[in-house]
Image (cartoon, rainbow, N blue to C red; front, side):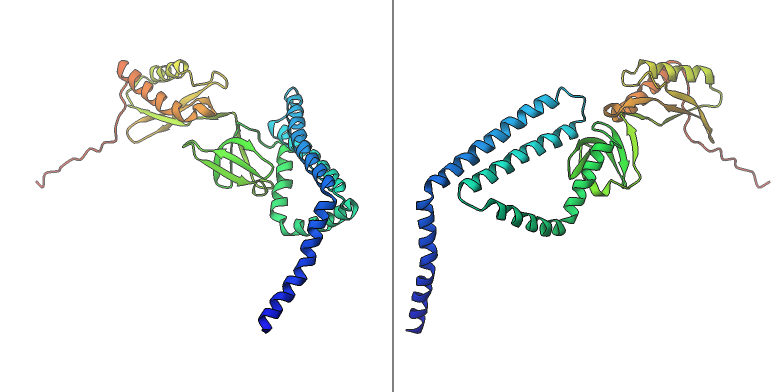
Amino acid sequence: MDSTSSGATAAVAAKPWQDKLIEYVITHSGQLLSAAVIIAVGFLAARWIGKLFEGWLSRKAMEPPVKLLMTRVVKLLVIALTLVIALGTAGMNVAALVAGIGVAGLGVGLAVQGVLGNLVAGLTIIFTKPFRVSEYIELLGEQGQVTSIELFTTTLLHADRSRVIIPNRKIVGEILHNFGAIRQLNLTVGVAYRTDLEKALGVVRDVLAANLRVLKEPAPVVGVSELGNSSINISVKPWTSVPDFVPAGPEIYRAIIQEFRTHQIEIPFPQREVRMLNDA
């Protein structure tokens, strides 16, 4: 009997809340319908205004991350204004709601300091431009071509096509090596000591000139780098664009081997001479 009585009491206590909700919906049905229409129109307007604003920014000389940021801010402002108008239309006290959101925002801000740190760092990167999209950078032991700069993260593309996503707060304040849009290969080929060096160097330069991936400016660096135990080592340092950096090396090595064989230039291999002495 006691449990039945308590259940009935709970049902009675819950009924007025349900009745008030139903009564509010019925009484303010017109206002709620208007608020729903305003929200739907507002979201459509935000999308339309965002596309219009993005098209206008595309004609300006601005960085892609800045255009993306400004477009998103405009969309968020339109959506926020739409929600405020809709809530006011539904009969809510907008002033009290805004004040409550401000207090709640302070608490949320303290709870998500890391996220806000990424946001501030992202804005710093976008406006100070220590690197740009398509440039090759190295930092924090990672390296790759920058494919996107977002508000919270920066994405790098490795030569093996894998992606590295770095939080922006890890980038700001760290030592950054920016290779830019070009990179320099560091190749080495050895020739025998009896080789005509001018002929060998000329062949290497001809190979670089014939390769379409090698840039004409800056000019390739070719010269003797070391006198090895069994060979004279020639350093070959051409410049390429970032996308051509990986395939250019094997192509150049292959072409050098073929041309050396054609011109009978010997590429020696390490060898050791052993002399046996007679006990007598």
